[in-house]
Image (tube, rainbow, N blue to C red; front, side, top):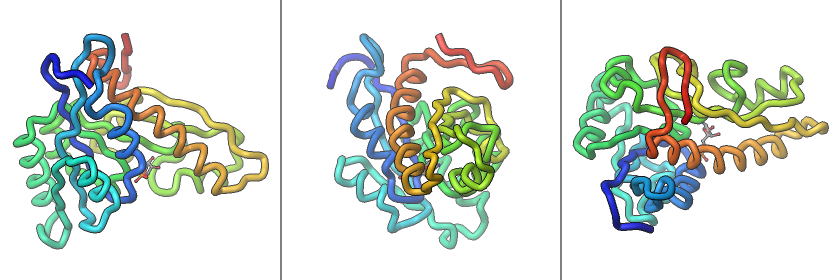
Length: 211
Ligand code: GRF
């Protein structure tokens, strides 16, 4: 932990158990992004699900939380505007989606253009959308993996930042594949966040450059 330099402020949006959030808390929050780099700070965790395990993990780490249940806002656009206002008040440098199971409106994405990232449990552009692991098993691929990408207004379609391959167990056992994919996510996501915090990631159209 370092007290030097301005922090790199991130907020995480999550709908579920929050194992990726936990990996970010353990491996990035309060740590320098790299030698002499900014300290990464998770300044807020938001969820559409008031009972999400991710919120509990945030509270345990003394990170402020906020909930945005759909029925409290009526329309998605209104809810997304409230989330965007909350993120702006937190002065976030980066919005990290970690199992956030809602689509974000085009207005939201344009307010945070180039500053929203997501993790997906497949090697995009293969198997976008729901149940990527089930899709990979169903398709019979021998290699799948994990992708961290910028979010645009499509589904899992934004510029790819980093990917890591994972072998599908010969048994085709879903639980075994889920475990290895999840473990890979937990290493890759904090790593990608640290690279962004260090200012090493830029993109031009679909092409992401890492220096
Ligand atoms: C992860 O598999 C991630 O790839 C996907 O949603 C899942 C979230 O899991 N986007 P967790 O809540 O971080 O445990």
